[in-house]
Image (cartoon, helix red, strand yellow):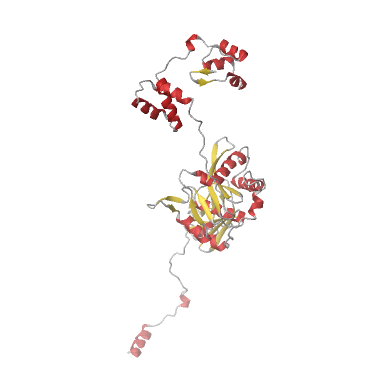
Length: 407
């Protein structure tokens, strides 16, 4: 049935559960008319609903030709009609075009398939969770997907900075037991500082150095073309829609333990595109071998300054170090659930990682000898007093005789 050029299916509206009153309000027909149509499947036309001549009628063949050429923009069509002498309104044009405009659809793209070991895609995502007090919070999730096997690795972090990014990259490579040849990212601020005059990305120096040291080629997807790394885009969405909803966890450490189990489950499922399990295809990934621990050890460490009271702040937790290192710059290493604190090449403290913010962890004998040293981390210059019995007292005549002999 038609109303003002718009197709109305009252039976579909009824199937959706809409009442007679609601259908009357939406369509403009009376309730009795709607009841009669639903009963007889015919809509009686009143005299005043007969189609009347329109100023647009002489121009409809021209409009249909425009539709054939893909022109549906009413502003453009109105300008073209004005040039041909149309003096009607804009509303009648919009009502007419609405019946011919094709539905919106996403632009089709070619699938981006890669050879074994050729590349991986990486991205950040933000997930919502609710604390015990009901306050909503966000937590960042790192996601990496291997292009050929679709094997997925995820890790939650408190920060989206370059140090957290590199640490997650190392963990992902260790999880996959290898390194792909190419790493594809979008224009994430974590690794791209901007674009140069040559239209090429200016990579973060630490990320660029990391990639060069392990033989990783870095590439960035085209601007406004996120489908070029659609595998990781879908993985991030899958984490938000499949892993996070209803999830209960104590802290981010517990969340990551659950995430690791979830990754194992996902990688053992039949993938919808490949028709195979990612864990089976992972064995066919021609990944580069992992470097030695010494080769990327420096990328696991972050520089921190020790406070005057002997603590290092890391991910919202204060870890204690011997008071002698107060005020010094140290290196913090997050390794397999332990927080190591290094001064130069010496490990001065080691703590089990804590994920509860604002927690404090002291180290053994953290303040031993502090009172005796009066809080000074370096010895102060002093004079030395010796016993008078140990000093030989000589007459001045002895020195005069020595002078004469020398003369």
